[in-house]
Image (cartoon, rainbow over all chains, first blue to last red; front, side, top):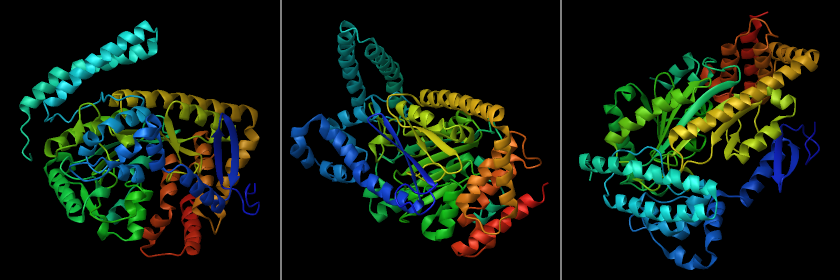
Length: 181
Length: 351
């Protein structure tokens, strides 16, 4: 089989493009495939994708967001949009307002339910959790009223996960004696 | 341990043992972790990068099952060595690019590999041969627990483990399984399967590196979402998906056997024939032909070649492995000859 683009070299890379549910198969030689993938990367660079997702949420707050700077590592939100990477752990708190919708878009959720390092330092965080459960409860009520049961089930699981964690977290904070802090 | 000691045995993930090892090559779990007090590697100064490396090395020294593991600093490795580690799946291609304060910690069995200062401060990986995600998770969970007693991981209760790229935030976990799916490719079912996988928010990659389609009918499938599900849930989900794909591949194999057995036998034995007699062969062609012989071995169509020997050939015919075996740099053309010689000698004894 010859390459679909140059028609000269044998096709060794087989690519499947899906555009609007239309599937298109491309058979390419190594050289053309490299060019094609470079093209695709230009179109869909991760940083653009991430930034695009964030902007999609609130198109007007661009300028305001760009000026935000992480007090710890000095990375600005504009830097993040350019490179697609955050600068340090504190960036998450500094850009919370804009990262929250972004994370939700990427993962379909904005609440961690997995393991914890067993070393949480901020008792404050528990307060945030509690506020979150209240918020979630009111969302749950609305979902039930709207008969959006899938959404309701998801919210219920989140609340359960949050509530289960709180007592143990507080114990961990008591135990926590962090030598490096 | 010296880097060349690794040559003496086959990588854990190529042992060809473990559950469903006819279709599942290996299972891997990876965790991304960062130290709270430092900027992420791409944003850190050289001094900060060195300090992170030192802290991680100190932590490693206190942990029983990491004590005997060896730390390789990338600044001390040449390009062939780096490529060698990439070929053995002990570190990523990206990790081999820049060398500042980067290292990789590898245990003697090559089950555990920890990349230091890749995209995140720590990328911990545990590999198992065959379909064994739960086992891999069990091991990595213990390593993570031990490390978290020594190191201060960046974490928020709302968003979990904080990573340089928000696509890894939450559990920081990727579970992935390497599959050999020749029947799904030959029966042209693979695109349907891959489309379904991407709809379920899993990603598919090839044997080596991102972006390219699979060579040799190898596909690596992993979870895309890392926030909002627990680690066990994520593993469970991948497991369920992989079980279905194994089922489909087995059905594909049955279809091939019942409808085009002669054609299949022809193709497998021609592939075997080329491998046993070629004098010049590229790594790409080698992988594709070995894939056919592997299928032949699974179906009992080629005698006396066991899976572990085929698996070994997959790796020792890679460019950097050939050069490590010869202990010198070899040009691409000469490699193609050396490779053919090696394959002939390994497969020639059978018959």
